[in-house]
Length: 76
Image 1 (spheres, rainbow, N blue to C red):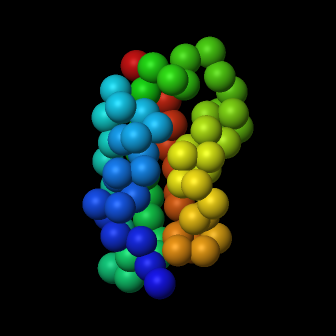
Image 2: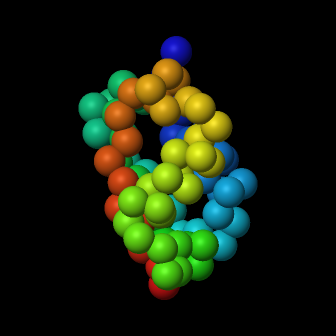
């Protein structure tokens, strides 16, 4: 079972309500996405910690409903 763009965005908006989010379906299969997220939540954090926060926001779906996610995270 794949994850829709809207479902992915809902998880991210719940965790990062202030975020600017751009999601691209890379393969057209709802299973491989590219995602750029800009949020105040990332201020002062390393890139690794920023990505960990995103994976936490996905509530365990990474590797299951969502196979691949290329991330770009930044603070405003």
